[in-house]
Length: 136
Image 1 (tube, rainbow, N blue to C red):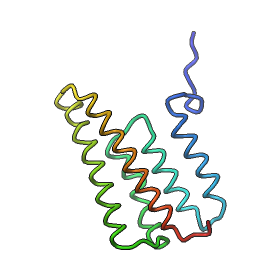
Image 2 (cartoon, rainbow, N blue to C red):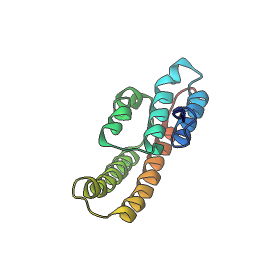
Image 3 (cartoon, rainbow, N blue to C red):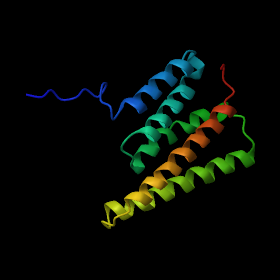
Image 4 (tube, helix red, strand yellow):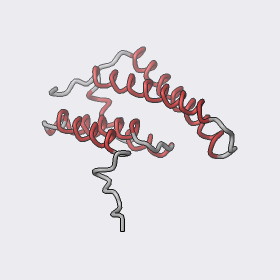
């Protein structure tokens, strides 16, 4: 009988979990930085997870109101982040909708939009990390 794979050792979850764990160790050392660490960990876990659905975005969006007072970002940069985030979500979700609900063969387009999704979300995360005014 084959033993089921542990979520900790599963090759499908390792990149997301490894990044989230590593970032938590780096950014979660001070109590006042915990919200930032939780936010970064959650974004990374969602972006690099093998499964992506709309509800996952709520996981880190719920932490954003707690983090905003600790950010120092220009209005133009904030607007750019919002536009990039919304555009990448929209692009990816529109292609995923075609696959899941319409049954269209959009695998290559979904893969391409998945790359745009990862790059766009990583760019937004880097902007937030640069704007963070915590103890780091």
